[in-house]
Amino acid sequence: MEYDGSTHPSGGCRLGSIPSTPTKKMEKFIITAILVFLAVVLSDVLWVLYIRRVNQGKALGSAIFGTIIWLFGAFVVINYLQDKRQIIFAILGSFIGTYLAVIYDSRKRK
Image 1 (cartoon, rainbow, N blue to C red):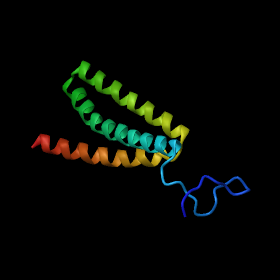
Image 2: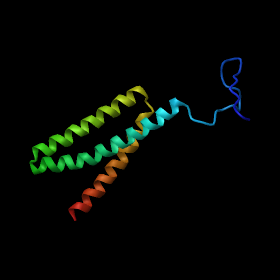
Image 3: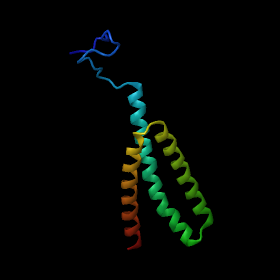
Image 4: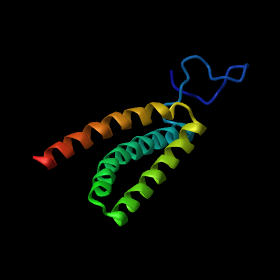
């Protein structure tokens, strides 16, 4: 059944009349989910670099990485406070980011 723009008298869409294109709200949700995921992945990778710089006594490098980590963290927190579903993408980003960071760090040390 094609979406004809009509609604049920209750105000909802008629059964089977789902629009085929995503709404602006859905597009915003998807874009935000991708950005939250990427922010957490990058944060976890940056943590490895941050810790390495701190251990090497490189103050400026440590400060730069620490600042970027906090910036990404603030972005993520603001977004999941607005929409709790974003926590799922933060968790997935954390898993992937930590995994990639450990793989990268172990190869770098060989």
